[in-house]
Length: 410
Image (cartoon, rainbow, N blue to C red):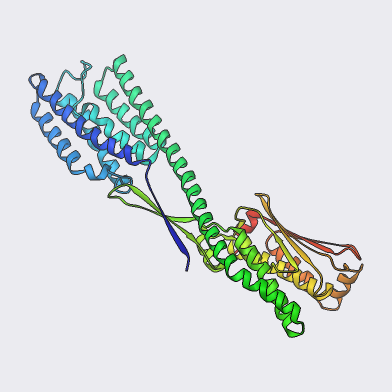
């Protein structure tokens, strides 16, 4: 089972939602105070009373909705925006002089609460849309808008867009911080496992290798196998596979809880590495041994699962050719390179090389190992397989897979 480490931290959006909650309460009270202070000038005060009663009840009932992003849905934002737009457009009906006097509307500055909710929830684009609707409503309500009218709506428009942009930047920073915490937690877990393995399993395998070599016979073969497993295990321990995390948000307190999982098996890694990707390193690392060296990047090499499996199978076929034609004593090297737009895997050996014309002769005799197992697989992935061999100097197979095509494979 995977080891888990909980990383609990406060969401960067939580203070903004709390401030918005307080803003809606205070601005609702402010709108009520303004109406009470100017009650005598309203020709139809019952319109204002009815609207402000609805606004007060709506804001009081929906305070939990603006406590976090999860509860603040698109449907709620649409209704909330409709309530404030209705209040702005009803102002001339309650006060016949409102279209000629640059006074406050019925919702007054409480109208900005709906715009700010859109900004925090959806970023600057949502803020621009909501503030534009409020601006149009204010201009229509005035009939003869003054310079102060344009000044006020422009101020709300710019301020809401700026807040929305800040929210988007904060979210991006939060994601970067989360990734850093994941890597740190996974690194600590890997170091702990490495210490435990070094103090137990690796030392036992090393002792078996030494004693087996000293005893000779069947024990020597057992020692050789133990040595290969020691090298393979050291490679896996030092590779440092770091999985992505699953995150959940606690709506009650706004804390973000991320569970960082450090997988133990390649299949488990494939499930954790995100939407339809698998780390190629986890599929190639088991090939490492006393006669096979494995060099990899420090970061995950992510490919679509089917593409990663086909590429790993091509590498296995190349190593099989090394053992079959270069002998058990030959050494091999696997090099993985991630160039962003393509992934390159090179398999090189120090065997005697392939004589000229041997591959063509093998294909003519029906032995299609290189043609089908290697080149065929790479062709299906949209990639290429190049084989370079110099008699007496070994063989090198270079496998190239364009990431775009590999990502769509399978």
